[in-house]
Length: 248
Ligand SMILES: NC(=O)c1ccc[n+]([C@@H]2O[C@H](COP(=O)([O-])OP(=O)(O)OC[C@H]3O[C@@H](n4cnc5c(N)ncnc54)[C@H](OP(=O)(O)O)[C@@H]3O)[C@@H](O)[C@H]2O)c1
Image (cartoon, rainbow, N blue to C red):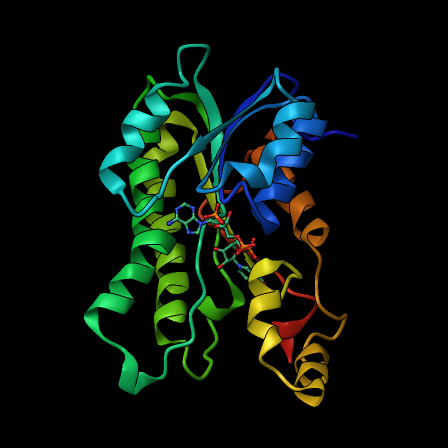
């Protein structure tokens, strides 16, 4: 059963990799029209070819906040959006002595500020339909801590605050805003983080997930559910999808 209404229109950031790319593919398979944003078009060439009628890709560095509204404006000629999924993000391990305003604010720019700018643009009636649904990707690190992750944990916690406040502000148009918080999902991001671990460390981290590491398809169904009308009474929430990581 598809949760997504055929013909609905979504914007997906982080469309070129990992969770975002899997969301794009699932939406297209369910008959939605998608605008994907990322920096490298090559990474979605196959999707662009297979879904040339329902998928468009816009290359944009989302840290250039002032370019976001103009970029999206180009795609509303054929209809407003029914929501967006903000999957673009960066993880970074920076021990406390190396933390400085520049590296922390760079992380905030992509993980948080670009999402707030997307919300600001979508709050305008010419961009979004009433009853739209918005999903942010936070992380279990929003509520937990980890060595060297002050910046990452702070940005992921910030997202849950943004989600609650935006959900209230947009409720008058029945626009819902939620977050999901995964633990480790196999993706280029987690591959890079785990690449530096020894075999024993890798096994130890895997064991911290009672049902093992997740795959993108372990989180995509919840995202589709949150986008759909089946979840129309759920807003302002942060839903953990973590194989039991956070209950130990
Ligand atoms: N994977 C995990 O274990 C995990 C766990 C919890 C939460 N998350 C969160 O889930 C989200 C997606 O993670 P993922 O695993 O799918 O990561 P990923 O495979 O590394 O993908 C990250 C995406 O973000 C885009 N991006 C990064 N910086 C950008 C910028 N400045 N402008 C535009 N796009 C930018 C990348 O696009 P380009 O490559 O085209 O630039 C890419 O599409 C992130 O917010 C991450 O923190 C992931």
